[in-house]
Image 1 (cartoon, helix red, strand yellow):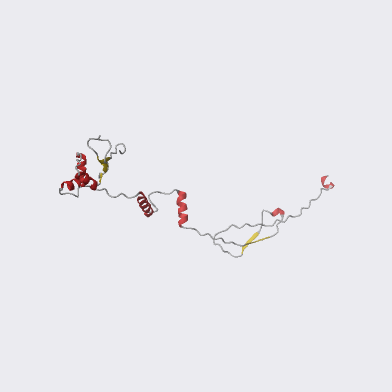
Image 2 (spheres, rainbow, N blue to C red):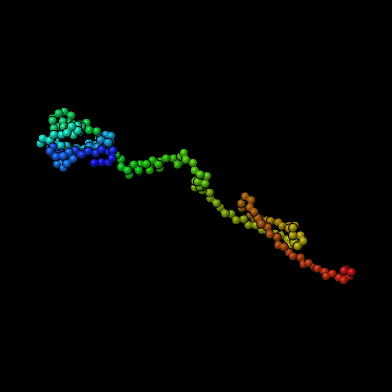
Length: 193
């Protein structure tokens, strides 16, 4: 019984004339020595019954009965409580998982790990949200009609109705272009001669 390199023994009542691995009369316990402390589970009531009707335990089973205290009860010796050590109850997987999650939530958010630059910027943006306001500025453009030849020199004055924003804003000034009528004189015959 059991897995490879993991011993597991059954404590059974069997007829001495039968084979060792043959059919048993009753299973009264089990012994698992691979753990610390070893698991020894014996049904005391059934063990005392079989000892009372004349069953003779093997040396290994007698040692187990002494640990559980059943042998002392049968013989009327002191120490009937036995020396059996019991392992502490194991914590369930769900309970251990929930405790680990709770501990992880209690850890500081800024630990030994460092965030990448973009992640740090996003975290900072979430921590300090910037409220943006939109301010409209009115601009009045005044210009004079300009001749075609003087397009490079556009006199213009920009007057703002109200200065609402303290920061500098870009104002586009458009000057209307007035085309001058060009008078082209046809060459005269006298001029070409």
